Image (cartoon, rainbow, N blue to C red; front, top):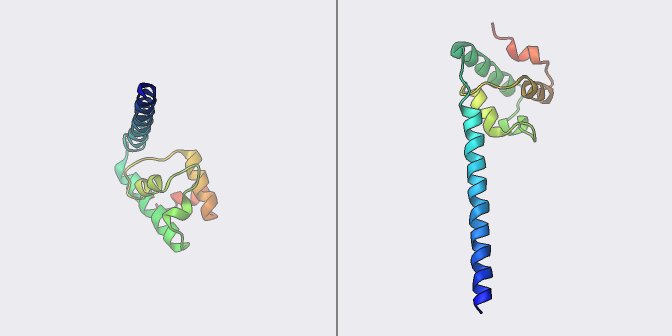
Length: 108
C-alpha cells in the first residue's frame, strides 16, 4: 500500500518535472526570437511590410509559410518587424513563395 503511494507520488513529480522543462524550453525559445537587437528598425519595417505584401499577393497565409524550419509565430514576428530572421530561414520562405531571396528585398 505504501509502495503504491510512493510510486504514484513519484509519477506525479515526474509529470510536474516534464511540464516545468517544457515551460522553460518555451521561455528560452520565445526569448531567442524576440530579443534580437534590431540595428536598423526602419529597414526592418520596410522588409516586414514587403514580405507581408508579397505573401498576400500570392494568396498565402502565415501558416502556408510555416514548416518544420520556421514557425507561424516567427513569420508573424518578422511581418510586424519584431525580430530579425536568419538567411537560411529567408531561403525557406522564398522557396515556399516561389521567389528568390533577393525578391524579398525588392522594396527600395
